[in-house]
Length: 116
View 1 (cartoon, rainbow, N blue to C red):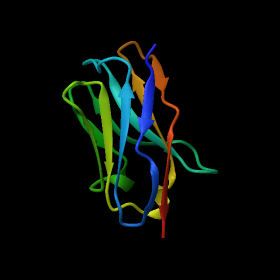
View 2: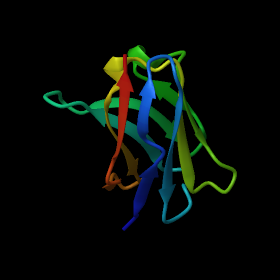
View 3: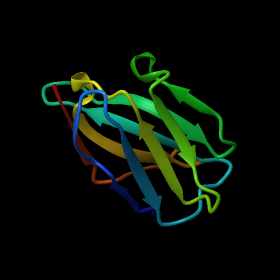
View 4: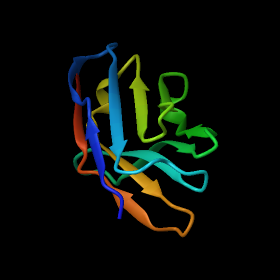
C-alpha cells in the first residue's frame, strides 16, 4: 500500500503559476511511474504528465511548454510546476503511482481554480 498526499492547489488568476506536490509514503523506485491527472466538472479524467523512476517525462499536448513534472532528490515527492495557467486548467488534480506489478494508488486530489 502506498499513500499519496497532494498539496499546493488554490485559486490563481490566468497567467499565474502554482506548484503542486505529491508526497508518497515510500521512495519512488525505478519501476514506478508517477502521474498527475486532472478532472474538471462534467469531463473525463485526463492524464496531464508522467515521470518514471528513471526521470523520463511526458505531457499531454495542452500543457506542453507550460507544465513541468519533476521529482526531488529524496525520491518520495513529485512536483507539478504549472505556469501560464489558463481557465481551462481548472480541475481537481490527482497524483497516481503505478508500481512494477501494475498496482495503482491515488491521492485525494487538490483543487486548482484559474480565474479570468
